[in-house]
Length: 403
Image (cartoon, rainbow, N blue to C red; front, side, top):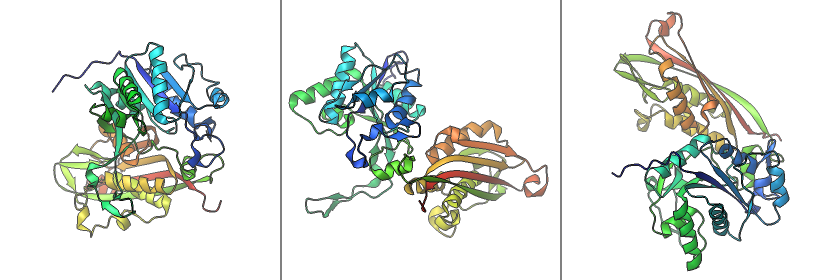
């Protein structure tokens, strides 16, 4: 295996593509200039890059006639890394190429992250993952998510032509990371060859003969495309979101064993737990809290212990399901609060790993996950070390059905 490149000091540019009109979003103005809270979509997308010291250059490609909108969006930004905007082209491919050419004229060389301005919810962690991925001896790397729906390919008559295996399919996000010189050369080659219609830069790099690596994306990194996406995001003018709170509780008895799963983390212990699945009381309580806030039953409703397919199942699947149900109903998870009750094992040494695992399963930022641990002062079944319990509270927002 070739040694990984040391690009820790190499320049990194963020190139945000904001030249589209976004007509499918159902607004008179381009979707990147619609407001989410006190800022535009574009301002939200810019913020994580400007907050990251690893980013040395920030460039934006804007549409014709959007100069005033863009100026209003960035009026409060004084960061010298933000370059003047570049006018875009007729297609996304044209706009990215023009943005790359502007960076080249400014003397840039290093790694470039190409990001859609209509994805305002990316995290600093995803930016870091993109930089690392393209630094591991890769020319191109893109964030992907597993496909959960069955995908069909249809023929020209609208009939099913093929059902590709789902385990080989992924959906693609941005930011996509590239070695700048290679991406610019590929765009110039495509222009010279008259090749257009590439819907993302990874496809263009594939055409140019470059391998494209992948790294895990984030479910929260959604693209705002349709009116209902703005409902989910809580945009002004969309159906208002109302706060709902759910609680969850779970308990499992100890049995002979050498480990238990707690908060998505495997912990060595002198006991195991008696359970149909992996017995993770923390994730079970959180799942019930989310389902309760949705008024969609409980974990047993969706994953009955009588069903053999859930024998030994990893509980992060249950939490991911409940979190996805929130998103499917146009909602968002605001906070998950968890209390674990046991005499042993000690939770403290594993707290941050649990927060990471829970945030990943729920598709939220780690700062939206709180974990506390307590004993029952040697009273009751937990005090007698007969088992472990967990209590959870989930705060979510859903579109108002009465609005």
